[in-house]
Image (tube, rainbow, N blue to C red):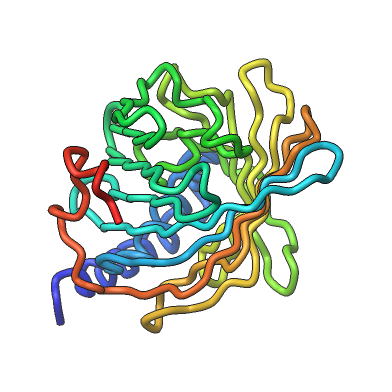
Amino acid sequence: MNTSVQSVVWGLAATALAVSGNAFAQTAAEKGLEIAQQTKVVDAGWGDSQAEMKMILRNAEGQESVRDIRIRSLEVEGDGDKSLSIFDKPRDVKGTAFLSFSHTVGNDDQWLYLPALKRVKRISSRNKSGPFMGSEFAYEDLSSFEVEKFTYEYLRDEPCGEDTCYVVQQFPVDKNSGYKRRIVWIDQSEYRMHKTEFYNRRDALLKTLEAGEYEQYEGKHWRPTEMHMVNHQNGKSTLLQWSNYAFKTGLDDGDFNKNTLKRAR
């Protein structure tokens, strides 16, 4: 049994004991935290992955523009994950590359290479709420989910499709977040995110993200085929369509280097 599998097994055992022992004593904050921890435990051990993604931007009038992107990701033990997004189409964004280092504590590190300017731009923590490449996703939406970045409040159970979802509020710890809170629907069978509502700093509903058509890889890792973000305040939306997932492809730290962003292929 390898280390990552052991950690998952022991994590599941610990969680089961915690649930059985605290079922009648848990506060809403404790149960919300426990659900968040479990979402990380059940997906641990994926190592690295690569996938192709089509990003479809729709304006309020329904006009579309489409971008083809390759995504590379690396699981980091003891910290947040790393990811590299490389734009292949259309021609005006070809060669654009976005590198993100998520952290469990403190600000994430993010860089964007724009070939038209021929320079690497660092995304400051104060700008993390800004839109990513004209989409309805903010830079902070592209960081990996890390338990320590939020405090939690379990709200209720609710049907979601053929499953039942935990409904949990998440409050960002970072004062530079563009959100006051998020409400997340997580299914109880596999701990997959089905829907997230994003509330801005004035506590008005800003966006809703829905994920669907999940497929399982490596016998345990679930990934959505589609993610759809709708902005309720400007009428725009962004659809992400994923394909050709591959896991444990041999990526390592050397493939996620800001000094080589200009040469990312």
